[in-house]
Image (cartoon, rainbow, N blue to C red; front, side, top):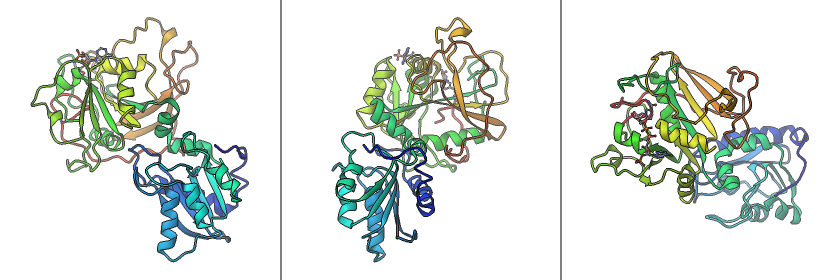
Length: 394
Ligand SMILES: NC(=O)c1ccc[n+]([C@@H]2O[C@H](COP(=O)([O-])OP(=O)(O)OC[C@H]3O[C@@H](n4cnc5c(N)ncnc54)[C@H](OP(=O)(O)O)[C@@H]3O)[C@@H](O)[C@H]2O)c1
């Protein structure tokens, strides 16, 4: 890991390098949000700051961003010797599915390397040191906040050895997910449901309890606006002991079906971590959602809120064994989005890393506009409705 300048490091860069870093972040986001590897972008600059070539990582087993940029240069007859490589993540120093980027940059004769975030992944880190030792001018980390945000799900896996967990709820204003008679179609708007499907298409796994799987017979697929399946289908994970019927929709087209016969959310995440799952979307039901919250294993909440009142019916989260407001589980609002008539509130646990019970204090922060570094996928068109639930249409 590198320990070069942090404060003001970004400002110390040449304007062309700062622009190139912005571009490298844009390129990185073209890579898949799902999959075991982080999203990384790289731009090669000439001495005068002209962009010569660029590349990004397209997923496990494909070229890393630095190698892709070098390939891009050579494909256009550009000699990368003497260039500056501007990268969103410290170049790796190990041979994983592909070769070490540090060696590729050295072999190419790159003169200077600027990177946003140091690589915390022990087996792969050390690229900056390796390059420096070989005489390359290396500057970084220069933009850790943006770098961490870009690869936050991957970082959770590297640092906490478990997938990043997003909990999704879709409720009325009074927190209900269904009416007293069990009917729940539709509480949220087509815009909300479409957005939820774009999220599905970006995660590695969708998780529900057996209660939801047996009651609603969901397919848990990610679909395009016209109803066709996205190319990427997340794993479909059912948690609980009861068997699913042979004719369950979960056995139909879609991602691989995995049943984890436990009630322990940590065991679910360990099972998925072993499969290199980085981002999990927990879609309920209330019992499973409550278990994840109680275990402090929710990193992010996507709460779709419809301007609807029911006054009775099940709520999105089951019993948390909280009897006093003093022990309320509080969240920090990160973003709000208007989706048709609904609002999507994106929140994180009030203290980073865990879902913490906090003492009473001032009211939770009012919804604020999205901070610039957070990218929310664009809304998509709705999918066909299902028999019951908002969140797991067939
Ligand atoms: N509208 C919505 O947004 C929405 C979303 C999801 C669900 N729902 C509704 O929620 C209802 C189902 O509620 P639910 O709470 O039964 O569903 P659930 O949370 O999906 O499933 C609960 C079941 O999962 C197993 N389980 C897994 N982890 C557990 C744990 N830590 N503690 C206890 N049990 C655990 C148990 O079954 P085993 O005995 O098999 O182990 C338990 O009965 C359905 O009617 C569905 O329509 C609504």
